[in-house]
Image (tube, helix red, strand yellow):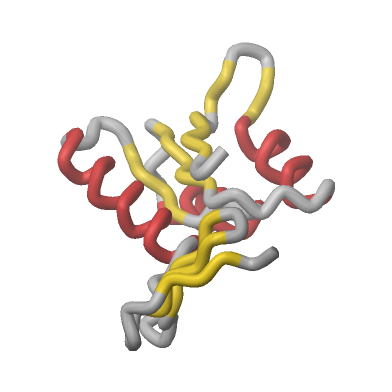
Length: 103
């Protein structure tokens, strides 16, 4: 998955346990914690447990979309020095505009 949205208060389980377990087993997927628990202490607990961002309910859908965009952008930064595109054995040099195929 590219991103996980995780509620803090799930039936019978705290989202903190899930995020802690995911981080412990090496899952590095960005996690947006969502919760009605809006106290500063609760937000800090969510971030320290391994959440990458914390959004409190109620929230505007535009704000959630913006936070998701930011987390995805952080995960896959654009490499401004990339000078070629490669698909299977086909390579396109973006500077010289030459295509080549490996044999």
